[in-house]
Image (cartoon, rainbow, N blue to C red):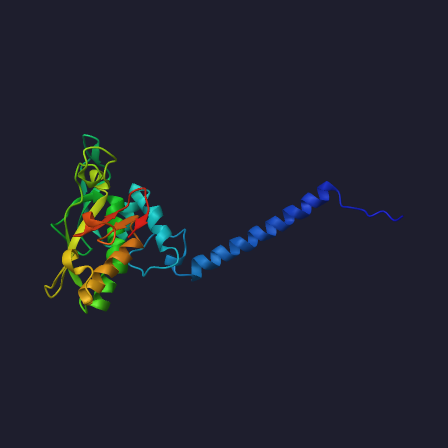
Amino acid sequence: MRLIAFPSRGVFLGALWACLTDAALVLAALVCWADAAAPPQDLPWKPLRLSEPPGLATRYQLERAVADPARCRAALRAGGVGFSESPPRRESGCSQLDAVRLRSGTTPLAPAAPVMTCRQALTYAAWDRYGLQPAARELLGEPIASVDHMGTYACRNMYGRSDGPRSQHAFANALDVGGFTTAEGRKLRVLGQFDGDDRKGAFLRRARDEACRWFHVTLSPDYNAAHRDHLHLDTGPYLRCR
């Protein structure tokens, strides 16, 4: 009977190590090639660039940026978004921490410059540039001049109940949008127009759909009666789009 000789353990491990080394070198070469040739918005290790169109990695780049206060502010500055710092504030289980006020470089909010977390501000800027304004040009034929909101910070529980979990508004981490004003002065309101068959209704629903791509939670009149007159947008710990 003929015996089959198997390689020793040392030889096997050496061959395995050589294969892994070769694979690592190939991977490194591919990363270097991609870093030089691929659009930065397609590369997850690149920083978020609001000046670039959205790409394969933009959503991940946004999530990485909002998770770090310094990186969040760097992304705003690099994207031409002007902001001022808002002092920390705490009251009755509510807080305004890591908060800013947007001053320029995005579609103005009305009333102007509400306080919000940096993560909320950067996400608003992404929605504005990547979703809101392109939708307005496509469906309305003109840009949005202002986003008309109903507040960002309010020290309260969800739905204003006497008990229960705090709303993201209690941490300046939410924005309630009641409508929009176009460059030509047309008013679009969530209340009464969201379900319309005209271009206004189509735009309002598209604005909601685009917000779902960037905010963690987007709630509209399709969610419940409490949101019949606004879009609730937040970057809290939960995920929901309706």
